Amino acid sequence: MDNRKELGATFDTAASAYDKMRPGYPQELYHKIFEYIKIDEKSLAAEVGSGTGQATGPVLKTGCSLTAVEYGENLSAVLKDKYKDYDRFNVVTGKFEDVKLEEDSYDLIFSATAFHWVPEETGYPKVYSLLKEGGAFARFANRPRTSEDNPELAREIDSIYESHYNRYYGIKSGSKPWFTEEKAKEISLIPAKYGFTDIEYHLFFRKRVFTASEYIQLLGTYSDHIAIEDSIRHEFFAKIEDAVLRHGGTITISDTLDLELARKPYSKEE
Image (tube, rainbow, N blue to C red; front, side, top):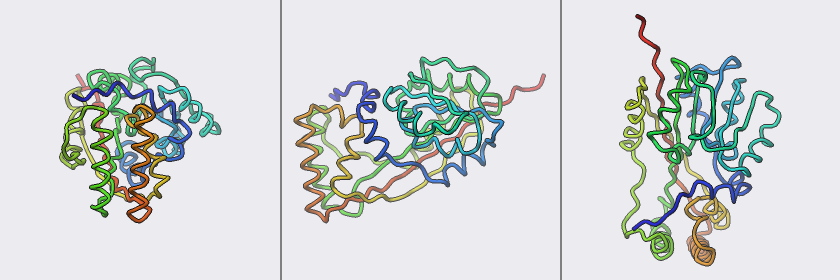
């Protein structure tokens, strides 16, 4: 039985490493968003689960007013400092489900690798209520796949996960299912259940290369890895670092990034 607890708050314990190691998002992704919904200095936007602002900058650069909703106090502090020169930027510290925002007000609400923390039956109706008619919801995420180009290293890392991560969390053995276009399509259709229209999804791809030590720093920003008991996590990370060093000293991550877009429809004229 998978005995993982709610992990959303663990990010806040690694705010500095999170800011350093977590990647941003490609410009092509933002181009798709801004083709879908025009955002400028007259626009009002909100971001759900901003972290330390990996996805925030390109939206702020449109000149819009942006409210970032972030649960972690330490992450919020980094976020405020990073974008302190934007006088139309505001950070609200709290869970998206709980914070008070003005309904029927936002041209764009977006969430980057964060909306899975919000219960679907709460999150989508709240986004809908906050958007203006014709406003857009952009949900996007980074889906990393490790060592696709080095199968021997991939097998060894899988074995280490089996003996440490899977055993710790009580997860049954088996290959991890990688993200597919079919999954992106499935996610894109969720908003339709809550009244959204004009559904779209788009996929983007990239590769990132890390040294052994950089990769361990990256793993240390993942909530489920942070939550592992210290002695087990230290051994777990040490074995992975050793495996990378023995297989050439670097590890390549192949990212699939999915973007799902949906719109709050205009009221039908009487």
